[in-house]
Length: 150
Image (cartoon, rainbow, N blue to C red; front, side):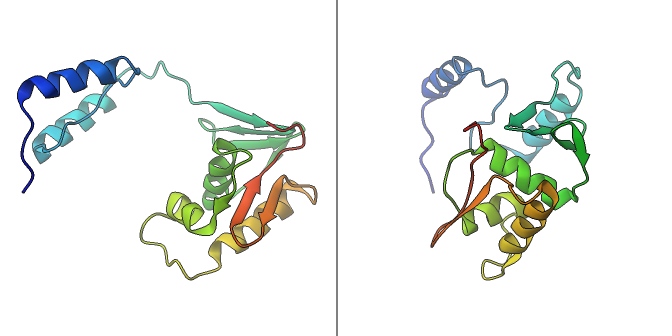
């Protein structure tokens, strides 16, 4: 059982998190009812925030429209391929292990000993053309390295 921190420390945490533009958070321990109430409140917020458009080289990924373009041409991607490309684009130039990719794209329930990451990277490379910016990092996994370095 964890000891609860004094209330004044919780207030200090809230103030400190506010300085980092966190617009909502939940302090543990929390009641399930509080979690569901906050989720409902977030759902009622105005839709004034636009989803980002990620760009790297000739590739643009519009998160809100769920659309990918390469040099202006729309590329049809399956939902998992889209999530995989989005994950790569949010982590440019980083050597990403297969395990990390698997957890981020397929979730914690994914089987760690499958070749599903390799298979979907193959699909993405084929759809993005032969010069796709996904490089194999031997013994590690993959790196998204667009031609312009972004």
